[in-house]
Structure formats: C-alpha cells, structure tokens
Length: 334
Length: 276
Image (tube, rainbow over all chains, first blue to last red; front, side, top):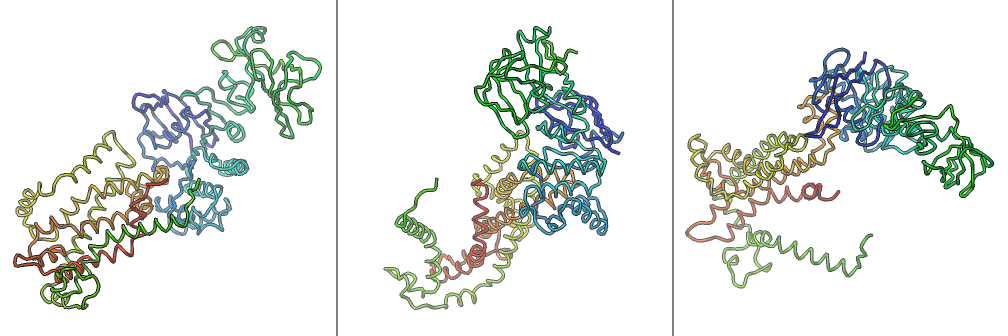
C-alpha cells in the first residue's frame, strides 16, 4: 500500500508562499515524476511529503491515515537524496543496515535483507568499504539499497542522478525503472530533466512557481500540453512556438510545432529559411534555423543522413495535424 | 596559479618560522633549564644559558615538600571533568544552533562569546558566596562546574563551526531512516564530528589545566590543582627560582606531552573550516 494524498497543502517560508494550496493524489504503485524548472517548488513538495518540512496549511494522507503531523521517521517512506547523504563513518553494510537497526529488525533478518539488496544492486563486493571509497554510481546504489531494506510504502527520490555523469545517468535511470517494475512500490521522483521524466514516469506532474501546470502520462503531455509552458518544457528539443501572422492564419495567438513535426525540403515548402547551426548527432540532425517570422531561431529535427550545413537555404512545412494552438493567455485551443 | 618559491626564499621562511617558534617557546625552555640549576646559578647575572652544573636537587626538594600526585590528580579531575561535562551540554546546544537556527541564533552566539569579555574578577564575589552557600568551596565539583561554565562559550562555538560543515541532508537521511533525535545525534552527528569534538576537548583540557584565577581563589588544601602547586613556591619570604621552575615544569609536563602527541589533531581542529 502506498497511496499519498495531498489536500490543499501549502507552504510558505516567512511571507513568501512557495507552494500555493494544491491537491494531488498519487496512486499506490505509481511512478510519479515531479518536473519543472529550478525554483518551481518540486523539491519542497517532496520534502513536505517526506515530513522534512512542515506544511503551512492542508493535510497529507498516507495510506488513508492523516500523516500531517507525523514525524518523517514514522511515515514509512524512504528517501534517496541528490548528494546520496550516506553516513561517511559507516561501511556500506552498516549504511544499509541503519534503517533496520533503527526499526529494531532482528540481526539475521537484517543480514538477509542486506544480502538481497546488495545482490540486486551489485554491491556484494563493496559491503565492507566506506562510502568515500566508492564511485558516484556505487554511492547512489548504496543510497537506494538503504531505501529498499526499509520496505517502505513509498520511495522518494530527490534529483538522485544529478551528480552522475551522462553515461552513468542513463544506466541508473534504467535500474531505477527496473526496480520499480520489480517492487511495484509507489515512487515519487523529482527532477528538472524532462528526459528523465518522460522515460521513467507513469505520470508526470509539471510544476511552475509552486502551481501544478498539468498532470498526465508522458505521451499525454507530449501530445496534448495544456498550455505554452508545458508545451515548451516537455519534449527535447523544445517545441517551436510561433507568434504573429503565421499564428493569425490559424486564428490563435500562438501556434506550436515540435522539431520532429517539421518537413524539410531543399526546393519548396511553407516557410523559407536559412540554416544557422546544424548539430549532427548521427541518427538525427538538429537544425537551428533563422528567417521564419515569429520564431527565431526555429529548431527542426531531421534525418541524420540529410546533407545540410550552415548557410544552406531550406524550406519548412509543418505537419498540420501535429500543430498545437494556444490563445492569448497561453492556454491550449482544440 | 601556484606561486614560485625559490630555495633562498624557502630558507628565509623556514629560519623566520623557527625564530618565531623559539621566541614563543623560550620562556618554557628557560623554565625547564632553570629547574636544573642551583638557586645561585638560577639568579646569576649575567644569566647562564647552558654552561651550568645540571642537578635534579630542585625536583627532589619539590617532591619532598609537596604532594605532587594529589595536585596532579586534582588537575586531571578538574580539567577532564569540566571538559566532559562541557561537551555533554555543548553538543545538543551546537546541534540546535547549527541545524535548527532561529532568527536570534547569531545573536545568542555573540552574546555567549561576549561573556568571555567580562573580567572574571567581576563575578568572583557572587560565585564565592554561592560556593559557600552550597558548601562546595575548595571542592573539585565546584571547579568542574565553574571551569565548564567559563569555557562553555568556546566549546559551543567550536562545535557549532564543525557541525555547520556537516551536510544537513545526512541528518535528514537519518530522520528518514527512522532515527529519533537522540539516535540522530548519537549515531550520526557525533561520530561524524569526532575529529572536531576531539580537538575541542583537547583545547578545553589545556584551557582548564592552565586556568589559574578560579583555581587559586576557590581552593585551599583539598581541591588545589597544579596551578596552586606552582603558586605555593612563590612565597613572601623570597622567590626560589630554581624550585619554582622545577614545580612549573612538573605542572606543565603532562599538558606539554599531551599537546605534543596531539599537535596534528589540534592544528587541524583549530583550522577546520578555515579553507574549503
């Protein structure tokens, strides 16, 4: 069991309201990602759920019981921090054993769970080392191991991969996703990286300035962003948002088209433009294009084999069925 | 960019450092040398540096006249007791100031330090009366408490500085792992701060060991520590420099030895957090 319910939860630091009252329900077993730019309140929201910050108003329910005033130690949640937050004076084994020691789990049961966690996380050979003797990825695995052995009702991850290098990040992303499939426990994951959000989440909560902008599955957010902010935030490279006469033609304030939904031709098309920078990734090429009125630069994602270079003149045609429309307030128009 | 240090420059720096070091250490060295002279050589003019007849007569005389062991024991109890008590009180205080600061935490820290600026003699009378009222004048327990209180601001300040260096997330992780406040302080914070706590204790032992004002004013025969032992050799009938030096050497020897073996710890402790 691991349903988490926030009723009109708000948080203020002094006179500054960082999270206006919000409602949110995270279903049992769901992998929910809080995503948003820096300072959007996603980490604060996670810390409110963890109990590390007191809420200013509202109620938090965990598994149907009011947890608003329950201290973090008693909420039955486990948390993995960005800085790993391992105990530097303890061996890996003792780090993983710590939550069980606090809970008074019998020694043989502790051993059994440590061995199981170490096996699952490839840490068996490192159990007697100190955190200082491990690499970043191993440390993060120890932090995850420490969370697993608690057998929590939900896992909370606070930007756990931010300190890892790019290659390791992709690997750990998969490991956490696999862990979720295996344990089927509720997980709440905070990140500013929309790629992590898209690849891992069952459901994404997009936050801005403490407000929930949209909640939905990764593909719902991709195909039907409810406003310009979500449209621009979800998807990589970012959606092109075009204002002015091109938007007027469709009777709205702004139109949006994703880079992968632009057809590129060297002979004819709707918009004539010049290639600024061509980023060749091998499989794809990202073109940064100048000259389209109302959106400069515009980005297009084309086949990696397409022979284009800086200064080439090209023609772009948006796939009309993939066009997003937004009104003057930035809200989606269907 | 690293600065280029020439050999010549290195020699000058090293010589200068040694000169300053010797200058600071000279009074102690002179005391130790004097303790091995006869009384006549001790007051000879011009002073004799090394060319004297080495003798241990002064030590014999001092040991015959006074019960060194009892003074030493009192010093150990007073310095050790006040340090341990101080740490027990200062750890939670520094924890709260470092990890759950209020708007006034900085003010409280400064206020605590400001009590060190008050001349001790200003509170001698009330404290003396309190000791009489509680019947603890000339007792080790009184000195343990008073020296603990005198040094508490320094202990809290030092521990606060160390604790500030410990990432709060580790303590939050302990909280998430089910640790109560007591578990958090006992199993996570304290072991992580051991180097800091050790150097704080060391410094406090030294301060308490050398404290003379309170130990001389509040003790007579029973609780007198080594500071009183030295003072007993400065008499109105005249000064016996060689014997006084022998007594001083015996009084500072334990703390010198302790300081020598823990100098690395002490230096790293005192400069902790200075560079990051």
